[in-house]
Length: 203
Image (cartoon, rainbow, N blue to C red; front, side, top):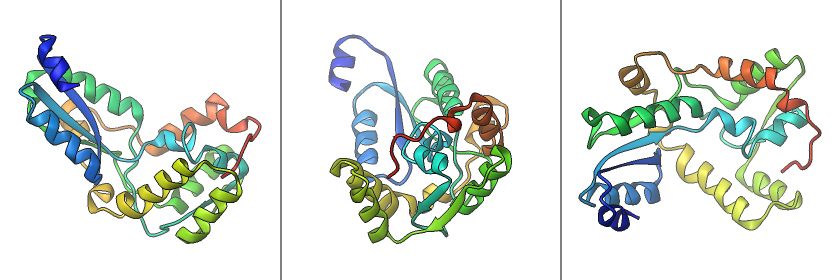
């Protein structure tokens, strides 16, 4: 991709990367050594994991059974990611930087369940789960092997990384506003009605 970009005369690239992911960091080095102007944007776990991604059906079923209850994650909103990526793409002041996009505070899965429960008006129970039980549940529910592998990798190799549990001020620095709080994301999602749809499958 970087070779084709250079040949096409593209001047700059922004890479959306992930925190604590060895494979993502290898991609960062490819872009950094490509000869292009670039900015790297590393994002924490998305708020939208709970309404569009892997954890949506758990919320809809009212039972969030996930490993690593001790993990504290500064969830970030995809709107913040999009705004940061747009800004650093258009502003060369951020060339060659590694920008970290997180939310304003860290939350455990139990705290996430409590916030959603309060705002949704029904109980979302958090149940700590072992990795073995988590993977077995995914398999029993018919999750494809690549999905099981990916989620296992994210929990065992990525979530426990210190970078994934650290709050950054880069959203404020770049956008001159506060990042979107998890509570505000939940308000918006509750209003959309997405958590009131029929559950199609539960991993």
